[in-house]
Length: 69
Image (cartoon, rainbow, N blue to C red; front, side, top):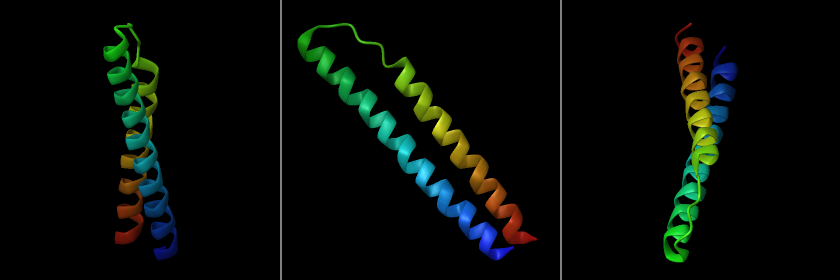
């Protein structure tokens, strides 16, 4: 069970990093659009970021459950 917990935790860390990268991409796109005075929607990028962060939280929860068992 410990190895499964470790694998889930490493997966959670990777998903967390991917989520942060998506938020950074959205922020850069927004800053770039402010300089050029264009209207750009970052909604799709932010949705992906939120999806990865929620997935990360679920994997951390599962990892903690398997660590306790």
